[in-house]
Length: 219
Image 1 (tube, helix red, strand yellow):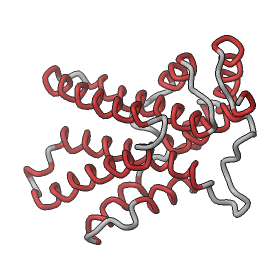
Image 2 (image 1 turned 180 degrees about the vertical axis):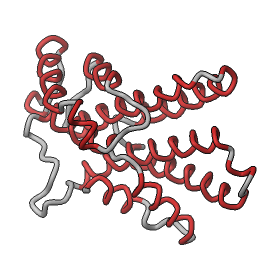
Image 3 (image 1 turned 90 degrees about the vertical axis):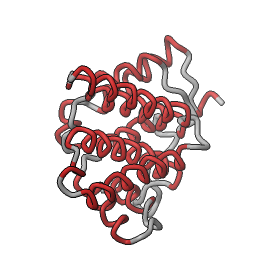
Image 4 (image 1 turned 120 degrees about the vertical axis):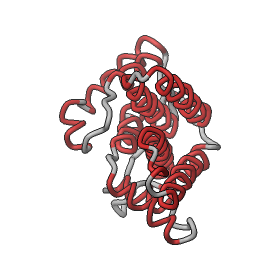
């Protein structure tokens, strides 16, 4: 899948090799819903004016960076959440240390990819909200707080996708995206069988008429 290739390519320079292998394995085993949702964000706002794929069949560089950035932030926080709840260092401290570092690297690389984009502030907001939610979860034992990560990441995906297309993601579109969240994310084929991408485009078109969404054609 194009998003998975983009995410793995974004960390190909990570060293040492065992750390990169841990990151690659986690990306390979995870759901690509956040990255794929980013692509749908591009399509929803661009309405064909910003192609997702180049003539070579690969993701366009800018689109790949946005999708990989969103995906890596999610994967890093997802691994952090798993480690915080399972506490693996109680059984294998060395392996847990590598996984903790892998989570940090994924989030940091995701930030790097989004740092000079219109999605940068939203990315920071996702991480801050995650920290608050997991602190409350640890204190309260409320597992429903876990879903907030998936909801926030889908909102980030829409923002990252919409802005690479030269537009904005209005509140109604972001709320619609967040409402689709489930935890954990299933395979994209399963997720998008229920979450129709065409509905995202329809929502964007409706918002454009009522909220003044800017698209490339308006610039």
